[in-house]
Length: 173
Image (cartoon, rainbow, N blue to C red; front, side):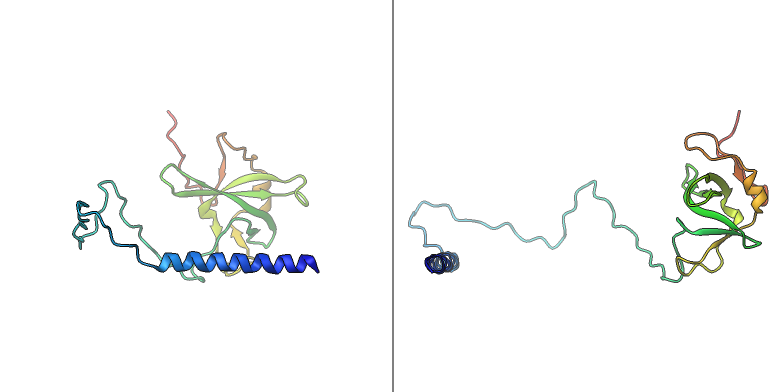
């Protein structure tokens, strides 16, 4: 019973202090009695916003409809004969930012025995990929992909292409 009494008393004290502080904040400050106090001058309001010299321009905005674009990482890849070719795990871009190829985790079972191979971006057909369960089609056979060398990061890569029109990422001299 004593604990409840002390708790009630503590609540009353906290509420009283809160009320006193809020009333003190609402009251206007007392006028200054000093005759020599300099008047406060407000700078004129400017109608032109001031921007720093090196301020970045505002970003451009593009709105893409929900049915017009979809992510591809993690999507299943099938051959034209509806064979499982793996899934897209990475995208390869050149120095100018253009997409050149996709890295596919190919083969194996439950992640065991799989390897990464690189296929030309133009060999992929996206067709209907309106939801995460839709797959992407690769214009290569399972035998062609199985014969491809494994992709290892930071090493020269062999890119499989359906049309054979790929150009090297950098000129060899």
